[in-house]
Length: 396
Ligand code: CTP
Image (cartoon, rainbow, N blue to C red; front, side, top):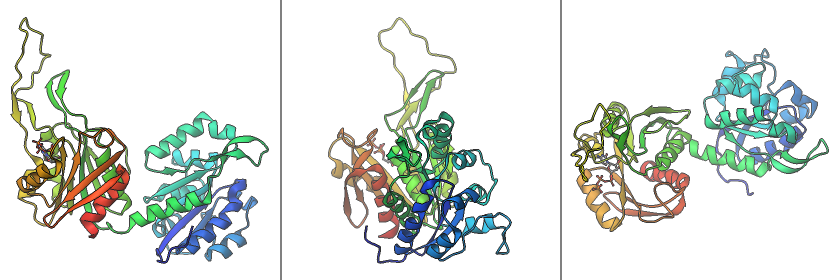
């Protein structure tokens, strides 16, 4: 991989635990430095059984941190280092350290920093195959993953312990690429507060029935994850449960969503309405389950829900408002009418008649409409589309 021309001016905290792959970190430090990154190594006491402090400090051009009580600055080290770093990369991550982190244990400098660190964390495990397959290690990794940690799975091959199987540290290029990908994200939206809605609203009819739609919430979640990684303060207003390192407000109906959005709007720089809001709800909610009658037909009277996008666009002030537009025909024609009717600044239009993109798919292809132009974003993962939308709205 060719080194970047620009200096990222970012600090990687590289956590090294006691495993044979620790020696590979000498090369990873060199790769980080070549790519314009400042590296500070935090080693567990066992890491020094595999690689020396002198080698690590010479390559990183920084002191190596290991002892909780070796205070070099006015703040306790686990706090000052956690503040300094833009990302924490733990490689190789042993089963022991993974499990301690997942339980919030702080028994050495690395586990303490991890506990105090509120920016992106990458974990690159390396261990014996049986340890990797151990159900407790796996469930701890799951726990970390569901809390937003990036886990770079180990690869299969010959292991230092003489066996063959999964457990070998993933390639250093993979660790470098992931680090750069996350750091590239983390700059532009610092100091911005972004509110994003996701999922399909649920409009209850009676205690067992409701009206909803097929929205998976994937696009909204991808937008929120990317905004967070780009440094924004994020609130995701979602119709489903999801654990994230940023604020998630769970709502059910369009009316709930309107209230949550209006509350969040007060201090938001941008609101992105990617939720599929039901246009109508049952006129009367039945407290008791509706019973089948002898009639062949039944009539349910629906009343209009508030139009959240239109409501917030009427009074937007300095807040950028981004709407979404799901169409099954005449995509651009309808989108152009919709952006005018709603009064939002941007409208992201997608064609829900296509099976390969849209609702439950992992990919999307969209047009972004604004007053000045219509921009096409070609088909790619929802994650990449999310990043491009945020870059377009904030950086162009
Ligand atoms: N929207 C909203 N409140 C509603 C309905 C939609 O805020 N009651 C928002 C959606 O979140 C989306 C945009 O409006 O950002 C467009 O949604 P869409 O379903 O495409 O359009 P509708 O306004 O519902 O119009 P139609 O269903 O007739 O296409």
